[in-house]
Image (tube, rainbow over all chains, first blue to last red; front, side):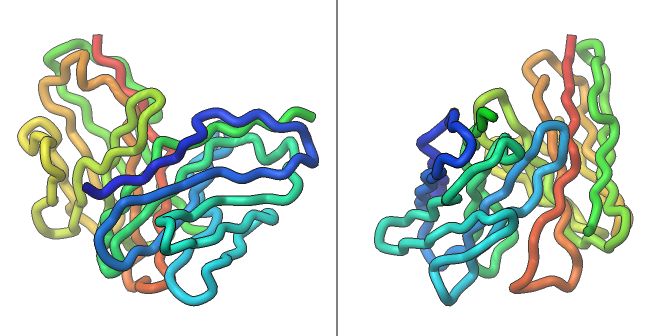
Amino acid sequence: AQSVSQHNHHVILSEAASLELGCNYSYGGTVNLFWYVQYPGQHLQLLLKYFSGDPLVKGIKGFEAEFIKSKFSFNLRKPSVQWSDTAEYFCAVRGSGTYKYIFGTGTRLKVLA
Amino acid sequence: GAVVSQHPSWVICKSGTSVKIECRSLDFQATTMFWYRQFPKQSLMLMATSNEGSKATYEQGVEKDKFLINHASLTLSTLTVTSAHPEDSSFYICSARETGMATNEKLFFGSGTQLSVL
């Protein structure tokens, strides 16, 4: 079955702490991978994506994610979080060449000032 | 950046009534739009793919007669929840894929509609 699993539902960090949010997927075939972020009161917006090439992708606001094919993972990282990173983060996968996105359950990140 | 407008942002209705939710792409054409449903603490679940000028494609388990989708133009898709019941209460989100974008594509999301059926 096609699925995306985000193991951390809630994460609380202090400013300047390092962040890693886990994402694992189950999907047969080549995939494209995404991280979306939803800031309080705002739309979901794209943080970064992986289609092919370098498995370490960099996104906006200092975020990066690493695609590890052997582990079916696409973990999101940021070396030093800020209070403004408080948001909900969604990992998503899409079969290459399809338009059907499958989302994880999301991780709520709260950064304490 | 591209904007998707979803309206209304919240609606309360009586059981048995129908509710229409609109999803508009404001500054781009969207051949394909998607409707998602999200229950508290759960993932966004794809309900259907809305294709301009043709019938929507529904995911398994989604009642097409219950959730009517119309995508009559390149900038507008509507979702009508017919004869709504309390179990239809949920957060509905639309997204749009910009026409012509392939490997560089991304989805643009509406702000969602919180439906509460009394």
